[in-house]
Amino acid sequence: MHMRQSDHDHGPETVPVKIILENPEELNEDGSDTAVHELMAAKGEHLLEIAIEHGINIEHSCGGVCACSTCHIYIEEGMDMISEAEEEEEDRVEEAPGLQMNSRLACQCDIIGDGPIVFRVPSWNRNAVKEVPH
Ligand code: FES
Image (cartoon, rainbow, N blue to C red; front, side, top):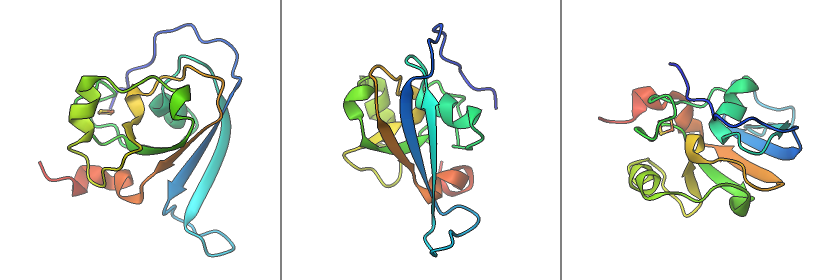
């Protein structure tokens, strides 16, 4: 699926972003089932494209145009470092399984602050295309 790219001219990658993936294919040495990726991103990028650019496959059925809810993530830190949810996103995210107070759609979260930003990708998101009833 083609993915919408942010159309800003990005500056330098100065914003620290930590992505916590639940249920990676391999367990860690300590038996935990999350994988943590730490990377740097630029203001203006959205969280979905950052993940995809770094080889982290978050589902994005609609290609990042806020027409599905498969890119559902949890913001664990830095909610004020990303753009606020607009009404369209709020309506969509309510359809996502596992809704929480910190739920967002990754493709709608543009980085606006200096970070750090920490977000979690729930395990069911990673094959949501099969699991989400239509
Ligand atoms: S990819 Fe569809 S809403 Fe984000």
